[in-house]
Image (tube, rainbow, N blue to C red; front, side):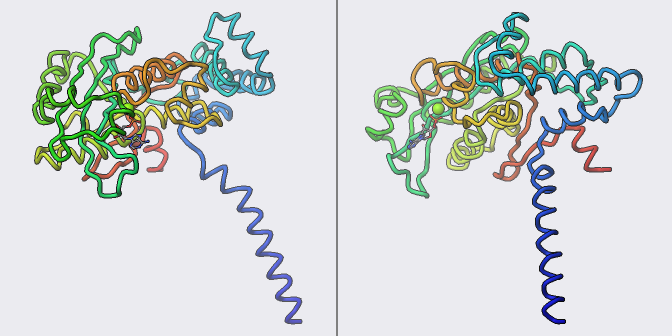
Length: 331
Ligand code: AMP
Ligand code: MG
C-alpha cells in the first residue's frame, strides 16, 4: 500500500513538473516586444475596440504568413517594398512585420503610449584598463564622446568629443593604448574629468538640452557606461552624479527584445545580424558611438520605439517599466 502511495505521489510530482516546465518558460521569458506582438495576435491590446479588432486579426494573419516564409521570400518582399534587405532571417522578418504593423495600426489601436525623443545623445566611454583588470581596479574615463542624433532624419547633427586626463593611473598601459587607440600624449594634454563634464553639460545646453523645446535621451550600448564608468568616476572625483545621465536607452536591450536574433548582442554581433560592418576602430569611443548610433537608427527605421529602459538608483541599475506594463501589473 505504502509503495502504491509513493508511486502515485511520484507520478503526480513528475506530471506537475512537466506541466510547469511547459507553461512557465513562455511566461517567464516574455518581454515587451513579445507582449506587444501577443496582444496584437490575440487582439486583446488595450484600445483594440472601435474597429481595431479587425485590423489586429488581419495583422495576426499577416504575421503568421511571414513566420512561414523563408529568408529569400522575406528578402524579396522587402526589396519589392524598397526596404532594407540586409540582415539575418529574424531581422528581415521583424522588419517586414513592423512595416505592415506601421501601415495598419495607429498608436491608439496598439495601446502603448508613445515616448518620442527628438534627439539621442549616443555615448560610449573609454577608460583606463589593464589586460586582466583586477576586481578592484579603478577605471577612469579617458574618452568622452557624444553624438547628437536627430531621430527624425537619423543624421548626426553634432558631436562633443574630449579625451580626459586620468589622475589615479596617469600612465596608460600599453594594452589600453592598443585596445582604445588612445595614446599617452592624447590624455596628457586633455583636461581632467570634472572639467570635461562641465564642458559636456555646457555643450548639451547649447544644443537645447533642458530648454523644454526638444526632448533628449541618452543612448548607450548596455548599462556599464553609466553604472560603472560614470558612476565610479563621479564618486572618485567627489562630484554629484549628473542628472541628465540618470536614465538612458540601453540599445543592446532593445536590440535583443526587438529582433530576438540568435547572433549575440556584442556591438560587432549586433552589426553582423543587421548585415553591417563595423565602421572605424573597435574600442575607440567615438567610433563605438558611431556604430551604436547606426544600430539605434536601424532599430528606429524598423519600427522599434527606443524608449528609456534603464535608470540608476543609488548606484544600482533598475529597469524603467513602460506605461502599459505598469498598468498591467497594477491590475
Ligand atoms: P568598450 O566600450 O567595449 O571599448 O569598453 C570600454 C572600456 O572597457 C575600455 O576603454 C576598457 O577600459 C574596458 N575594456 C573593454 N574591453 C576590454 C578588455 N578586453 N580588456 C580590458 N579592458 C577592457
Ligand atoms: Mg567603447
